[in-house]
Image (cartoon, rainbow, N blue to C red; front, side, top):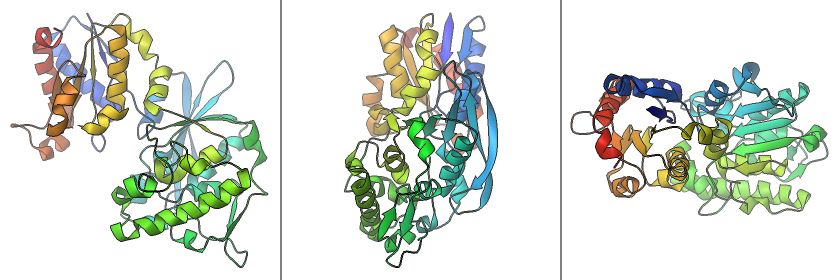
Length: 377
């Protein structure tokens, strides 16, 4: 019997690989003869680089760039071996993630460092990119990234402005005459499950700004600044990309990269394709997936749903094991998965689950394996 263990990371506690190992330990206690295949996954956010390098031939590289606050850091990226030439795998969270931003004011954060990383890759002769946009701390519309690649954001006097949400208050025009022409020869795939536009009531600032620190009274102000940036850039390109699905991903990084020619694809699907999930499912008898918290958003394209969809097409039962499951979403999740388990419950508090995630994953996985006949009905 082969059990495929394919979780996302449990953000803030365990990487996808560590989570898979903890789950495997529990399954192995009950099913010692089972073949356990670990397949740590991701959706374009934190952990994407690790997941891809776990499954594909390649290597990890580092380069000095600036983080969300302009401080120097060593950022990792991956180089995948491919018959059609190397592929650079960039993860926005490595450069402008919440860890790099700390407790700083979101108005002071910029995506310039990600642009520096992309420019470094261009200098190395790389022209094929996969860029994961999840887990960013920024809300600058990608202005910083664009500036690092040659777009000049200017005020009324012709001086360059700071490419932060605060600096964009003085944006008067953009000069696109010096955009790095090497980008014209690039193939860029954006990995994100976010399909919102850049601006408006369903845009980047309105939906995700508050969790990055944008105050309620500043949402309209920040949104207007991104709209102004897009108005100027769209006028130059002759395209209306501000309303394109995914333009609002990662605080507008989606917009900036699509303006540079990138194509968006659902991050979880891209990673599952890279990891050859469908091939692994052919001889599997059971699949376990999971994430830190499962709720209504899980059913809108997050990684566990994508795994479930692939498993169902292959005729393989799939169960969910997450850190917590929102009570109001449990019924809908149970309609998709063959059993839904959570660490948090009557015995385990949220604090305990965060503090001893690996231990409780192993325990819950053991319980799931004991219930296997009922789960697989």
